[in-house]
Length: 130
Image (cartoon, rainbow, N blue to C red):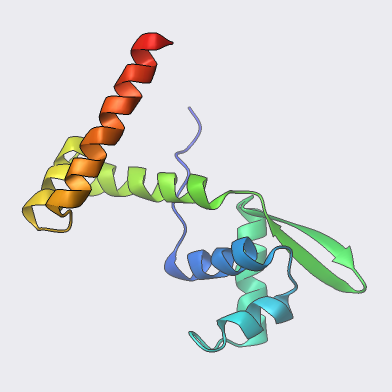
C-alpha cells in the first residue's frame, strides 16, 4: 500500500494559493504576492517551491532562465485531503463527529445546517434516480 498523501503545510498552502489564483508563476512572482501577508526571502520561496516539486504538487518549466511553477493539485483536491487528515486525526475517521462538533461549537449556524440538509436531500434523490 502506498503512503497516505500528507496535507499541505501552512506555508505550502500559502504558496499554492498564489499559484491557484495567479496561474503559472516564477519564484519572484510568488515572493511578491506573499510579501504583504508574509515577507519571505527569495531563497525561502525557491526552497519551498522545490519541496512542492519533489512532492509532486507542482510542475516546473524553464522559461527565459527562470522556472515557471504550475500546480498539479487542484484547490478542491488539496482541501479534501486536508479535511480527510483532520477527520482522521481529530475525529477518529468519523465525518459525522466533525459535523456534530461544528454544530455543538456553533461553527455551523442553523441556516447553514438547513442548507446542508437540503443539499443532502438533493444528493440522495440523484442517487436513487441514477
